[in-house]
Length: 451
Ligand code: GLU
Image 1: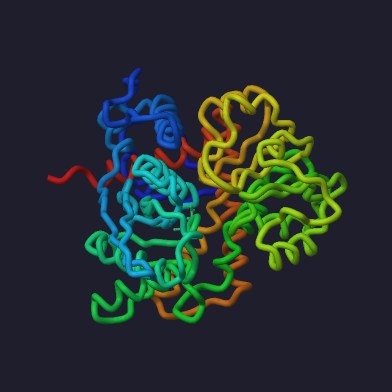
Image 2 (image 1 turned 90 degrees about the vertical axis):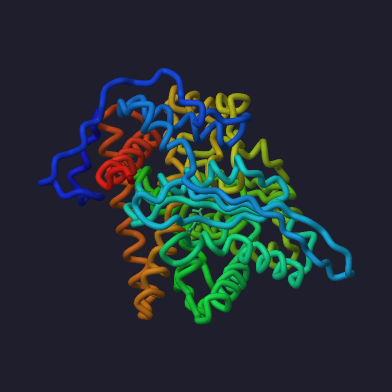
């Protein structure tokens, strides 16, 4: 099967005058060996999503194996000299899942549970995410198994510089471009950029995005993922004739994505009835005063203890009686165990991979509209792209230009995905995967195999 590119969409790769690669109809029943995840977790979810798209598109086993397998991975040991003089050792990874449409692109995660399979899943999601919003990038991801809260800034700087120097041959503005993710921030990106630049002998801002403004960052990048989440929520509500002031929202996660999203939802007139972070959550029917919650977080470091709201734990938040649920923390929180109890009519995935494949099937069966991660949270990488373009041209856009281009891209991508979903009678997730997997496959086939 070939999914016609939506009418609203420009050709992602080959112009229409060239013959379209024939997509064979022999459907592999079983994934090739390289596509089998080694354990249950984000990689199992990512591989199951890919297998579903491959089946529908009718691609052969060779294409499946190619898309299921990262192009390159590096596994590094990172010794750290601690502030007290002792030494500690961490494991780090960088995975380039696919580079058919351009350089690898994706974040760097610092979290104690990071392992290579999680990084592989996150890298694959970056490939689809960049393709769905038509960025000229492939997908990549990095991670270090470290709890950044337990180390000083000086120690984190040394870890970051050593990690960067270990993966140096793989990265660069034309090879693989890093950005912040869980546990890393603009300062981390400044250290990566500096380490890379010093080694190359001149300043190369395009090797990372999500940098501080002072060293070539972009206006609007810090809030871009959240803004994209809000744009895609609004687009999904419009399909039902509703808008943000009509809905009650619960946001799980109060980090770089969840906190700004909650603020923007409230600002747009939605009632944000629940929020949570890693320490606990808050619930208040009728809506929380987000400005006061944000002040409380600024002074205490957590949403917990905010007066005038009931405490709620992170798992109960997922099944609250609200209209829109926004999982914006980590992978795998919506599972076969709680998907039947989700009361929201819309799930907008601020996090990467918050819904397991089983939960996704249950939610689809129940008619819950899931705006998938690769679309919903693509605003971050869209403005990363704008930052990279600005850095390459050494010409900086205004905030208004960035916000306008971000809104256009998000709404354009949402419309294209919704069109495929309607035409093929599939969920938004399946439609987004069909479009993006096909775009990557077409790029791969158009380039041909070397040698
Ligand atoms: N870490 C973010 C994500 O998962 C941003 C990636 C980027 O900007 O490269 O989408």
